[in-house]
Amino acid sequence: MNKKKILILGASGFIGNLVYKELCSYFDTYGTYYSNTSFSENQQFYRYDLEEDDIFQILEQVNPDFIISALRGNFGAQVQAHQHLMEYLDKHNSKLYFISSANVFDAYSKFPSYEFDKTLSESIYGRLKIKIENMMMRLPKEKTAILRVPMVFGNTSPRIKEIKASLEGNEPIEVFPNLIINVTNDYRLTQQIHYLINRNKYGIFHLGSIDLIQHEEFIKEVIKRMGNFHPVLKRVFTTNEDRYLAALPKDNKLPKNLRIRYQDIIDHHITVD
Image (cartoon, rainbow, N blue to C red; front, top):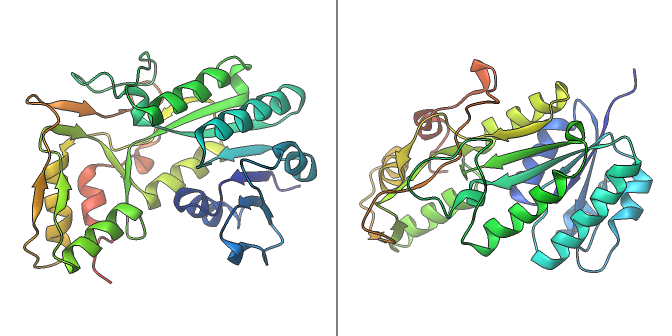
């Protein structure tokens, strides 16, 4: 049986690369990179400059069954690349999995958000994700999956690296005492994406913990887990009331073995190298 072909756009970035590593043993997996030339030796990787290159060329060469978009970079160029992707999907038998963000709900601060809630964002980043989600919704529904992801932690994550560097340099670590979030880690997120592709799922998925915690509490727990540190916390109050930034799963729940709680993320691997 022919292996399914997968193309990961942004496969040299933090999440894109972890997804590539998770999938490459099971599928015929390709990726794009931009500045990290260490990928140029890998025959499965294509150099792609979001602002200069046309994505069509790579799509025509790879002819993927699944496209996973984990692109970063210039927002205008991202929008244009995704417009081209929509045109490609319209004419080919491919499916797009778009890594979106809980930020598509960052204008709603009074409660957590679920898959079919209306999106509304105050941030430029959130509005970019909404714009791309809306483009996808014009395609036949079985051709797309929107994967909304909260803050990602895990050993190799930029957030954990930043905390480690701040602890070592005795620099203040920003915490948001009034912010209530759900979270995920790299390990569980890549497994969930693998499952969705394996099962050929489509629709909207919230790939975060099934429970909530305050940002400050979570960061304190993570630091405690790393060792005996006395961190300098810089408490940032954006509002006086509790504010939610959480995309919780309700309608499209994953199997029990793939769900995650924030405590699992604190317990899993967060150690000082």
